[in-house]
Length: 196
Image 1 (cartoon, rainbow, N blue to C red):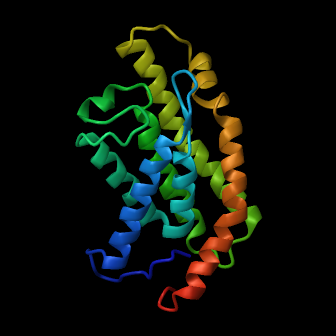
Image 2: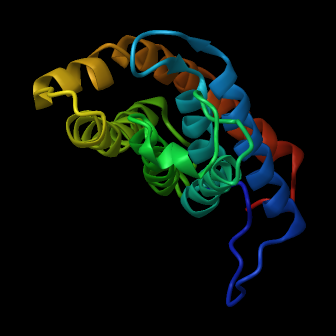
């Protein structure tokens, strides 16, 4: 169940929805500055924020929050892990940013109508959402390294550096969201009686 009431026949977002979208876009940006520097693909807290956005906002707003994050970074504000600006689309890690939109949407769609949200179902949603981040991330990494950076790498090498190296950190993040996600969502629903 989304924490924002469904809006029938309306295209505009409410002030509350816009605030939540902006908040999670900012959280994702902040998560990019908290990182463990490893070669090519740094380990950041961004995917943690993507997961929480899906659980809390639902699919549509979670994806929108990540789109806002990407657009702000592409406008030149250095909120990505390696800076910002329109040239960032040529970075090897740009596919992960596209994956944030996919992952947030998938996690949100899978969990928004689940009430109560069980941890076993949430685990499945988080794993599927993480795969939705990795697929465009590793694909763009592979293409970028081979065709833009002119560094010949195999797909298995791209998967190693773009997936397997950061996977243990993402499993820890899944554990954090498994524990805090349902609690946080329930607390927000309880404190906001207008939320369906």
